[in-house]
Length: 436
Image (cartoon, rainbow, N blue to C red; front, side, top):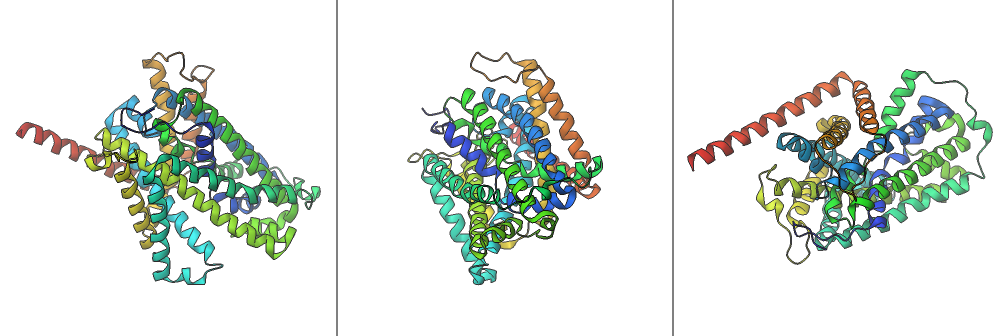
């Protein structure tokens, strides 16, 4: 079945669930255990459970909005439908430039750094540039050829990244010591909040995966089921990895910040174990890129269709492959360029706060849509009235209060610049209409 934009609804429950898991479980899980252990010790497991609950209720807002607004675009489409073009413009740019593009470049560089363990020449600028060109070219061609090929790549990399993690959990459970899981102290609320804030960012990514809503089969049922299933799987894997890492290494876990899971694997299976985990980390990062490049060009495409970003070629769909090929090429080209130049540090600070702002917008959009629309019989609706979206708003605002002054100032400056650009474009469009 084709959508109004000419896209095909070919993504089912397994595909969308894999896409969400693939995006959420990226590079973070390979470094998180040491950071959590340093801040909370054995009590760190509480932060995982807390963040799992928080992201679940936020994603329920995404599920409700996604079942009502089933066009391609994800969070952008939900917020634009509820609040109009200005907020849609902000969302698109926060999504693409404040969060996703910088994260894509960072992960690409992380892959190169990880593989340099085996291929030292990747530390050289020239070889590194060639590596990025090859990497992004492969991802571009795969996704231009068709969404089915893109989602197949996502499924394969999801299995490949989960295998070493599951092996670590299974084997590590026989090598750990229960005494290492004993709580030495009760963490303070302030410390718990700081660690949870950092850990919460590791649960992000599902919102990117919903950018392909316009190509999902039976979205009213598939989207909420995929969200619940994927968040459950992610939470189980995260808590399992943390428990095993803590039980095997104990308090020394905090000392392995660069590669804690490689240290755990080496403790269990020697150098071969560490090698497997390093390869697993590289595969996981590649999986993140495959999902991100499947998802984010759809945001560019949707915003171009709605003329929020007034670049008409981005709205083109390939007659042969039924994919938004110009948007895919544009996004991967930008990703490759930023990866090569490495000029993403200034916007890296905006990445985390940008995602929180998008979450806030979606939660508020659910409230607005509840007040202005009567959902159909097939539309998913979160139970409990407005409790979940309001609770989500409160939680997100609490998270934003934990941002540093520098991050808050940078975020406000970025929004101010985007607002200026929006109204300049609007003024130019108005002048063009008057002159015509």
